[in-house]
Length: 227
Image 1 (cartoon, rainbow, N blue to C red):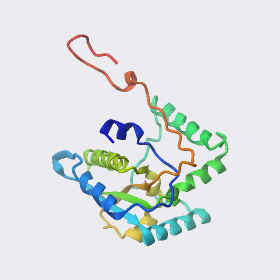
Image 2 (cartoon, helix red, strand yellow):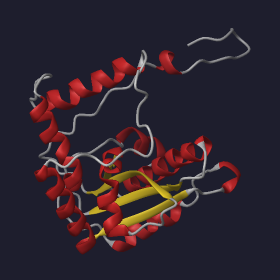
Image 3 (cartoon, rainbow, N blue to C red):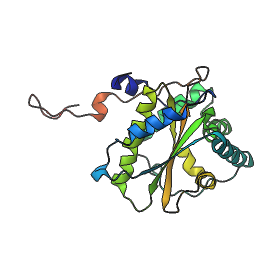
């Protein structure tokens, strides 16, 4: 699989088979992902890869919280600005409509949406997971490094025939994750990631992307700035 194919076939998969992901494959991916870029080579990511019994325990504990209707843990970072402006507000709304529409969930059916969201804490059935932490003393530039690292991981997973889904939702249950992983106190949980082989029986409609002219401006010798 070449890089273009890996990029264009990567998507957030929300349904996995229970087929085991070999340890050597995970080690190969994580070893290669270490070459992801970061400012001044700080490599600010702290990664936990979880499978087997520990993953089952984490899934159990999170499920118990879901069933009990426990409140989310207090946030340690802001996932979205409280007043999301255009065009980001419309893009987020379109994603929600597509995501829940594919599940047959009406816009106003909040209970059904919550049930669908609860699948996050079951890892969508995935047999492997990754948790990405960052030192709480680091700044915005280092947080952006996490994005480059995680994208590198996801593209390498595609090269291995695997799929994934990044999940900021796990930050809402960060205390439950910490009970299993025991991370140092100076780390913040950024996100989780479900990893495995896609279950083709589960609808994973891919979200569209904005047209090129909305996000890219070309400036060259032939004309001024243009979309």
